[in-house]
Amino acid sequence: MGQTATLEDIDGGQFARARARTSRSHRLHLLLVVVFVGAYLFGHRCWHHASMNQAPVCPQTEALVPTQNNGLWSDISALVSTDSFEKYAAELLGGAVRIRGETFDSMGPVGQDPRWKVHTNFHEYLEQAFPQIHKALKLETVNTYGLLYTWQGSATSLKPLLMMAHLDTVPVNPDTIESWTHPPWSGYFDGTSIWGRGASDDKSGLIGTMAAIELLLQRGFQPLRTVVLAFGFDEEAGGVQGAGHIAPVLLDRYGADSFAAIIDEGGGFSEEYGTIFAGPGVAEKGSMNVELDVTAPGGHSSIPPSHTSIGLLAAAIVHLEDHPFDVHLDRKSTIYARLQCAAQHGKEMGATLRRRIRESLKSDKKLRNLETLLFADSVEKSLAGTTQAIDLINGGVKSNALPEQARAVINHRIDSMSSSNVVKERDTTLLKEIAHKFNLSYIAFGHEITEKDAPSAGTISISSPLVLEPAPVTPIVMDRATPYGVLSGSIRATYNARRSQNNQDGDIFVTPGMPTGNTDTRYYWGLTSHIFRYTHHDLGTSNNPLGGGVHTVNEHIETSAFLEMIRFYVTFILNMQESLDV
Image (tube, rainbow, N blue to C red):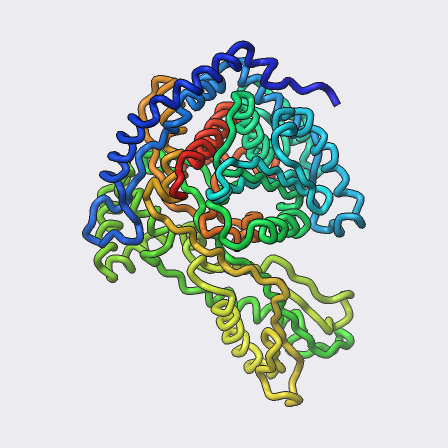
């Protein structure tokens, strides 16, 4: 493994000068606190306590710039803007991409499956790339490959901050390698972007977090609030081996509700209706796979019954798809909050849509009209409610033999304001109609629905071995003394700082969001109610999204976006250090 440049190599004399400036910044603290507290008291708003008549509908926290550490923050912002740091950061991330760490669904437990061993190379890379971190922070390995770093703070009364990421990536399909602009494990930097699997998901988040802390350590910063880094290694397969083992360690060590906040990968910011919106995830849908099994007598296909097990299964599937979940807009949902923000701040939103969104605040009839308009788009409808997708089906072994068994797997993504019990009740009711129609005995989620031992033409059963309930919704209080307020203010400060350096105008508005999938945060619900899924990454526009090739060919991230992620992590860490009421 080649040598990786460190910050000392590119920072030069700025390191010593920054320490002196950091001490001078403390003298500005008392004056700046007066200014910021006054702004906070004037601008305080709360989403959940605002009445329908109160304006603004989409309240915002002012940009939150570190005060006690303003000189330090300014120095780091200036350094991150240099060409030398851009090249350093590109190589830092490129080196991480060059270390393969694919997770496959078929992998066995750690200690039994040798494919996990690839993560040892990544451990060695981090130790080489971030020498200050490995001197100052306590490092523990959990279940061999999970990484747990502790940056101990001096104020034990403050709840720690937990920052998450994952080492692993989804596999690269060998059949697609020729379609990549640059090889998937090259970490190639073309002067604009870093290319390769994991460049966006999620090595940029992990390396960005580590780079931010390395920068702070280089300048002699010591935290008041403890910062814990938890890096799993199998997020792409559900996180059982990684985060599933790390979370109990933290719960045992710190206790329930012991962390001030958690931040993990998630949404970014993008242009919508001519305005930039950031959407930190404050909720996650639940998930459950329902296994639908049908049995029927076998035999020779030359003497078939009216319906084989496959035919009965097909009838059940059609019945489910003919009766999709009812989806409604709820004024308490994250999607509704996003709509209100778009109507309040979207410069290019049409007058009719803006009016309908605003009218829906007070009128249930107008809310239903908005719902009809919005859900004409299947994507919006899927985001707003519980979904079903028949993803797997199998049955039969030979073309001239009647199949005794047939199975389908239905994946449900459960609305954040619903539950698995609601889904089970709905599936049970619908399939009872199929059981009755075709005279099938019926077992639903372990319960005999039809009369036991009654004559039947076959059986139908549904079960769900694994269920993930929707995540608890993070409190959305627009207040600089709350984690959501600190996050929002940090997002706005980071965004505005870069634009001012480039002499650009513009602003960013923060609205509650929800990722489409699940993250490793599912294992950490007991540690805090303040969980954010957010990566400060430019996602493009709603009409022209820049997906960055996540989970497909040509995964990449622009260096400008990666540098802004580093700025954000620095800003958020410092703001959490200064927010003593959180």
